[in-house]
Image 1 (cartoon, rainbow, N blue to C red):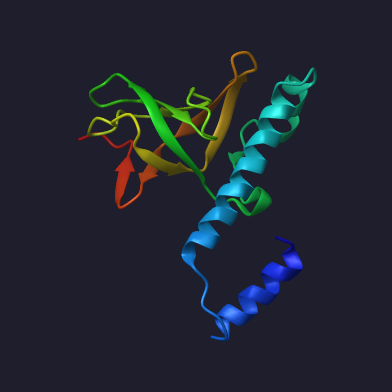
Image 2: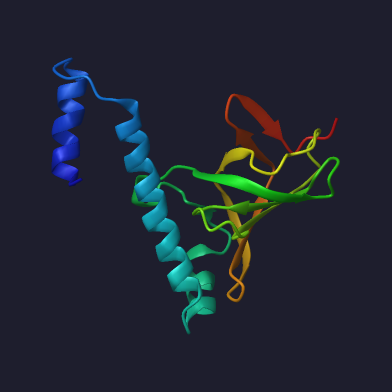
Length: 153
């Protein structure tokens, strides 16, 4: 959907002229995230991936509003250690393989079950191009409908 059309829809929505199904907005957010993640992965797995990371991502909060995405939505693949995990491994783009890792300063107070959906926007700290894995420093992250924190018990 074009930015111009989105602007018209927003004005119409705020003016009360139309009702928008929230699933439409979720679909747009999901597509924006997918496009952003695919772009990041493509850049980092290219021949100049290390240079791209150093100049554009390292020590930066990602996604940081890029492509209209304020936070990534991801699913937990696994967590280490199982109790009070400090390294959740995440699938970001439905790949069913971990493509992101959060390094929590302290273990989370509960276990994080595989399949749990979380959202995050954190500082990119490193990456591996093959197999692709982007690592983020994190003090906290959110699990929808409840707050998850790296704070200890």
